[in-house]
Length: 275
Image (cartoon, rainbow, N blue to C red; front, side, top):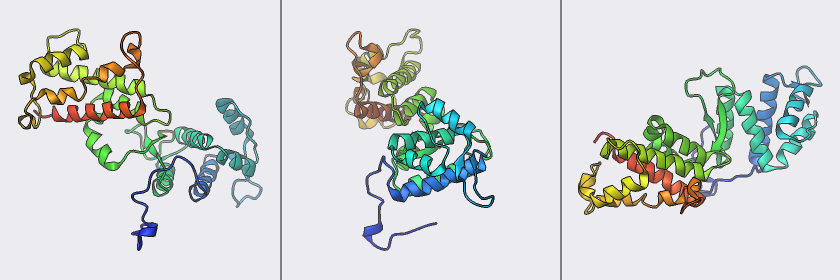
């Protein structure tokens, strides 16, 4: 269904994304979950032609073990429990996407989340899987289309940046891993471009070398810089917030710092392509 708001009251394009599940999202999600359970033969019915009214013992037992809590086999009780805790709701959605969902089911849930203003989105984890494949989807944090499009090439062509992205925008973000993977990506990018004979590259040293000799730098738009090292300076402190270096001068990065490092890395990566 498409909709172009007639008045500003119902134009939600600039509203902040939400991390909970209010009624207008919760009830469509429950219908989606009920249909998926029915289609995956995980439920029971009081009437043959009706909706799922219960869950099969084998399915509930698996949920109990995986999530380490006790769920009811009664659909109503189960639904109420799932919606009683936002974190549980997200994890149930993730579990169903990871195991039972094909393209049609994933697309329906994404429609609900996207149009409901959710901070979460459905993402395909195996890009090569067919539309009929089940369990090749997951729940992730939503990123704007503009940001995703600007990052697409780097995510497709650099595994380290892709892992950094996944660590930042997962349901349980790992900011340390984001920064570490970005530093590794930059280390390889800059070594390959400017110090190809360096068999033991260290990002901090490569950055210092380039800052000392900025004339070596060559990237898109470099003629617009009075000092080309300004591009490198964007990431000069990234190595100081690598959590795996906490025995030295490193420290754990914050969410804002990890996001900055990721997108600055993608920016630097993009400027070095095709030059």
